[in-house]
Amino acid sequence: MLPDTRPRLALGIGAVALTVAIATVAVYALKQVAPVVSLSVVYLPAVLLVSTYWGVSLGLLTALGSAASFNFFHLPPTGHFTIADGRNWVALAAFVVVALTTSAVAEVARARTREAERRRAEADLAAALARELLLGDDSARALSSAARRIAEALGLPSAAIVAGPDPPQTGERRTAFALRGADGARIGTLLVPADLDSDASAELGERVVPTLEALVAIAQRRDALQRERVETEALRRSDEIKTALLRAVSHDLRTPLTSVVAAGHALGADSLSPTERSELSDTVVSQATRLARLVDKLLDLSRLQAGAAQPRADWVSVEDLLSTAAAGEDGEPIDVQLNVDPDIPEIRADAAQLERAFANLLENARRYGAAPISVRVRAGAGRVLVNVTDRGPGIDPAEQERIFEPFYQARPPRDAGSSARIGSGLGLAIVKGFVEANGGQIDVESLPGQGTSFLVSLPVAETER
Image (cartoon, rainbow, N blue to C red; front, side, top):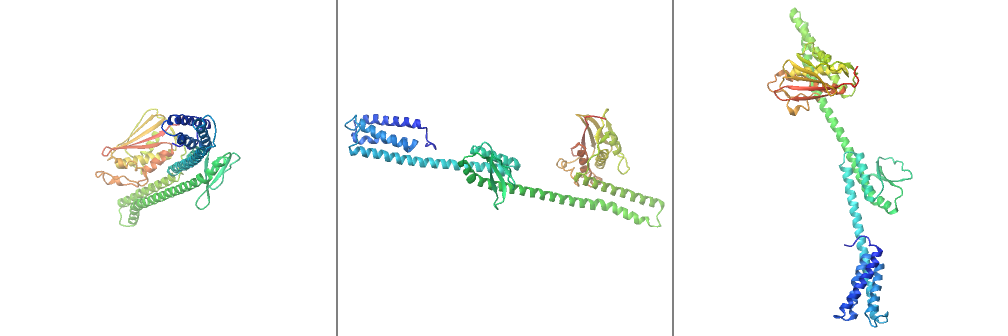
């Protein structure tokens, strides 16, 4: 119940007068049961109370007032002040000792209360700073929040934390406290208003700055570990891609190369008939074309991943792009049932990139589905929507998010046939890359056994040609 600061002085003076008056009245009532000379102890609670709450000054005043009141009202001859009797000196000395002792004990209690409150506030501030700096993902935002916490805890108008070894410009309005790591190197700076009093400045330097240094150092180490983790993850992903590339290249290149080499050796035989020679020649051309398509896909993917596939925008017709893509990359037309709504606007895009994207999308639908492939083109909400639907085995929901990854091939159903596995796993990755490079997006909807539908959405320019 003891407050860490004393109550107001005016209230203390009133308490002195009131408690002494109450004790004086109480002595009148107690004269009937005890000798007057023994009733001076009635004034001790007043001395204790005032000394405890208002300190030694008012405690001594209460002691003097108690001795004077007891002498004037109760010790004979009453109505006169006299301290000639030794008993009066003893009472006065007892009151003074009690006042001094009580006020000293109270001051010690107050000091310990203030120290406990200060340490609690420091612990709360340290915990808040730890939450801001160690749990946040955004370091800049965490430093800003930590500075705001410091300003609120110390009653400062503002505060800022600047990370880095270089001291910022402070000017005349700010004071800088250097934050150093365990090796003594500067890792940041705490900026506070320059007009701080000496107590606040000392508390910052002695208590807040050391805690802040440790937390900022830990936060920076955590950020470094996170960066290392990201780099490690990127390297791991790069290794996976390289492994997948080698696997795909070793399989998809070896097959046509083997066919080309075998056909080339056979063409040198003198016993070949014209029909057999023509068939071997066709084999060389078809397998070489297959190799060329794979190389083109690898180059397209490389440009997309390197950010070098910048589109050359021009006015193009989506219907013309689809018609060209349906002709087939190997000269074998793709059976497409094309439905185009009237008044489909032209779009601003790279015709070569979108043609390659639609060709890969139609080739994927032919590989996995049954002819014909349904293609619907419509306009809506400022975009041209192209829906490519096949009647194939569908894609498992667990794999739909991964089919656009390079070299990833979804597991075909058991009844999909051997042709469903043919491919390098590059087509859909290139489709997604070229569509997004031209400001569009692609989504997939599929149910196992019910076919797959790809929806390509392309933006329409605000000003048409």
